[in-house]
Length: 208
Image 1 (tube, rainbow, N blue to C red):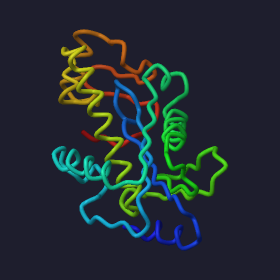
Image 2 (image 1 turned 90 degrees about the vertical axis):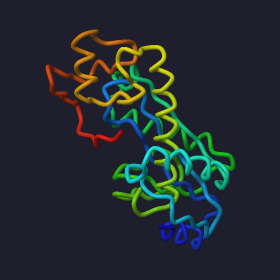
Image 3 (image 1 turned 90 degrees about the horizontal axis):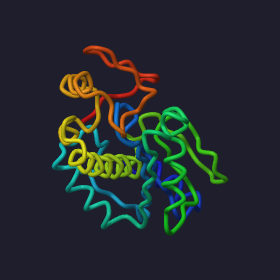
């Protein structure tokens, strides 16, 4: 899981950051991205793509990553800005923000997916990078747990949607709540839903 990092460090880079996002698919709430820099040769066999971990293990590994990482940055794009930008551009903006918050700053980027970032840094986009790179996997955990914490706070503000459970994703319960109560402030207006089915402007993986 650290072969991409080893290659970059072997090329002379000193601060290799893995970057991933959480929250492309929900109907409500923000989109988050995280960037993580580990020390060279860092290993932890428990760190995996966040989608392969239970909520309890994600939370435990979140604490481990925050303790072991040299640097962590988290970028947030709220629902109204997602509507304004579209999901892809919001994802890229959150990733750039996450990278900008790293201290020490990154000098090489490993990015989950196919898109590079508009930053003057050497970088590599890796399809399914959260299953291939330990720093990208760690970023997926940080982004997911951080977003869950935000959605738990929104649940207290809008309990009728049960964000504590669905985290804003289009579950049957969430769709029923939308039919009954309509949208709240954190719903994404550009994401359309009707009856018992949710229609997205862009495809995304459903994860809770």
